[in-house]
Length: 213
Image 1 (cartoon, rainbow, N blue to C red):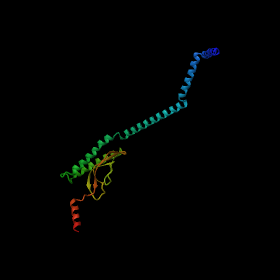
Image 2: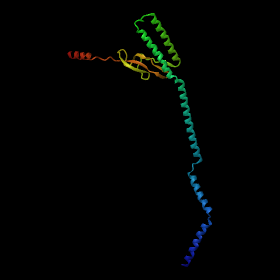
Image 3: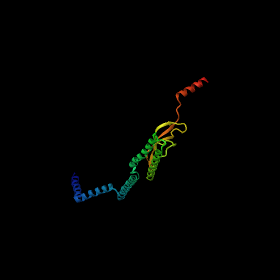
Image 4: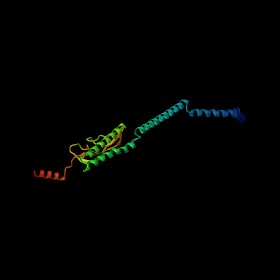
């Protein structure tokens, strides 16, 4: 018992002595070192940071380039098609000329008169001049007669029975359509052909003839 009692204080003293040998500063330094090592493990490597910055820079440049292209496209459209509204209004001049010609032609008092012929000639000259001015500004009439109906350029207003042409062929132009550069300014208003419908009487007669035969 005496030996054991004597050894315990020695062990406790030895342990205390080891703790006492390490100062508080040493303990704090060790703690800081461990914390730094853990933080370094969590930190991104410089190479990864550089790569991330390069990706961000590339995306920024790509976005700037897209914005520049959109701006250039909008500027070109504004330059090329900025007069679209004015052009549509100007087409009313051509429409009014055509209406005036039809009114004069349908006037019984003026039919076959020199005054009518001269007036129509002058109206034709004005019409050709307008078409020429529009053509110089890339505003051109749509050629549609005897062509198949194209919804991109034509608008069918009515159907006319016609066996000479295939169904859907434009046989009459009500209002002339125009394009500006490669875009539709206004569609042509047209009449298209359709097959003649067989009347009910004819069908009944044909049936009766077949039954009698």
